[in-house]
Image 1 (cartoon, protein in one colour):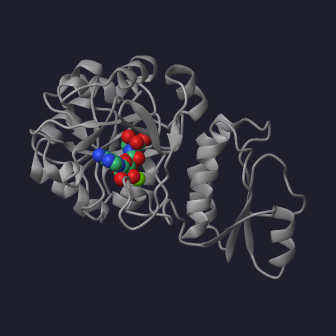
Image 2 (tube, rainbow, N blue to C red; image 1 turned 90 degrees about the horizontal axis):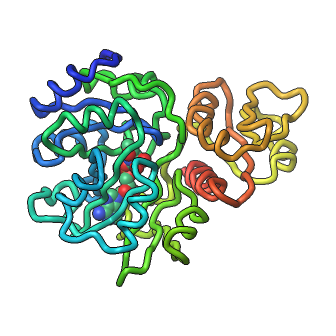
Amino acid sequence: MAEIGKNIETAKRLLEMGELVAIPTETVYGLAGNALNEKAVLEIFKVKNRPQFDPLIVHVANLEKAKELVEDFPGKAEKLATRFWPGPLTLLLKKKVHIPDLVTSGLETVGVRCPDHELTRSLLQQLSFPLAAPSANPFGYISPTRPEHVNEQLGEKIKYILDGGECLVGIESTIVGFENDFPIVYRLGGLSIEKIELVVGKVSVQLNSSSNPQAPGQLISHYAPKKKMKLGNLDELLRTHKTERVGVLTFQKQRDQLDNQIVLSASGNLEEAAQRLFASLRALDKKDIDIILAEEVPNIGLGKAINDRLRRAAAG
Ligand code: TXA
Ligand code: MG
């Protein structure tokens, strides 16, 4: 198992030697390596068992550092970065040549993001290179929001997990790219469309899921538990599956006389629901049940990203 600790020096030393370290962010834990070191980047794909056609996000301490990685920073990108960094926003921008093609899977753009977590920001400030970091889970499985989640699945393959406690946002960053300065959202995430539109006006949403998508990680079955999962009207699902051992993920309303039930937010708060989503799916996945039954949440604000993750989880 990996060591779980709060020692930035240890993390820094390992990363400088080209090794991988799991790092906390406000969204989910990342599996980090030196983004400019091809061997380290290759190791990330290996440890995650991730296909090399799925590009990695590069993490930096601030906007100035992000600018060193890209050819130019369009006006709207800069507005978004200024307003929302550090935070759950990834910008796709034209990459400079020194970013290895392996990081971007040969694409012309690189995903850059400045994560909002004190430990990781301080680590990034002390490093002389940016960190490539996908979510620290095996490819296709639910993303980790606590250090123990990382240890359960990747603990044998890495030495150190920087312990930043529980992730406060709980779902991955929102990914935004640009076409002729027009913003396009490629992945729904921890920053809502509504908030983005307040800053840059109307955006279009292109959630790709076909065979050669712009954001290949947007494969339809993703974030999936190992157990079978169904999404729909919970009361109907409960009737159809009444002879099976079910686990239930509800948004707000508790269903009486049911074991193995998790309520995402009793007060109906979408931020709280997002924060608890992945840990709840993991917990249900470990229960002695046949199937996980879940319902969608209201489709506004972070609810859109939560529903996106639920649909993908159920498509697995
Ligand atoms: O919140 C997050 O973004 C977390 C934390 C660790 O920062 N990271 C994360 O990384 O979710 P990952 O690798 O699990 O998901 C990154 C997504 C993938 O769907 C990938 O295809 C897409 O970003 N992506 C990365 N670079 C891209 C690029 N240049 N063009 C299109 N999609 C890109
Ligand atoms: Mg991921």
